[in-house]
Amino acid sequence: MRRTTQTYYILISSFIIATLLTIVPIPAWAKPFRPEWILLLIIYWSITTPRWIGVGSAWGLGLVVDVLRGALLAQHALGFALTAFISIRFHQRVRIYPLHQQALFIAMILLPHMSVSLWVYGVLGQDPKSWTYWSPALTSALVWPWIYIVMRAIRRTTDLD
Image (tube, rainbow, N blue to C red; front, side, top):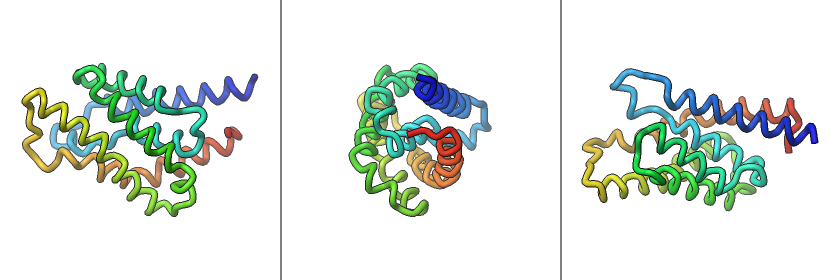
């Protein structure tokens, strides 16, 4: 029972830190380049321990992001659930890739999430008006190796599944 409790504490604390990184104020010019911190952790945990984090967890965390960003309810939830499904589907392949190939996979897996958000913006009559709308896919791919290394070290020192 202790191991399960420890796993929950690590998962919850990692998502709290990612949420704080998502809401920390940054300059206006840097906002389009903010990585998708929560989604990166969803992908990491879905790839390494798919029985702990799945589509339902991703949906719930997406609702949290919807509330934090003031977006249409379930906009991010749908994209997060889709991304979690894809990462769980390919988790055995992605785990053996080198980090630079994993980063490319991360960039590609973020595109469906961003496309869903773009579709919702289109339905609402909003236009991103710039190519920088797609920049979180690039910045998230650039940040991925560090997230993977840090989270793997935490997972190994705590002996998580």
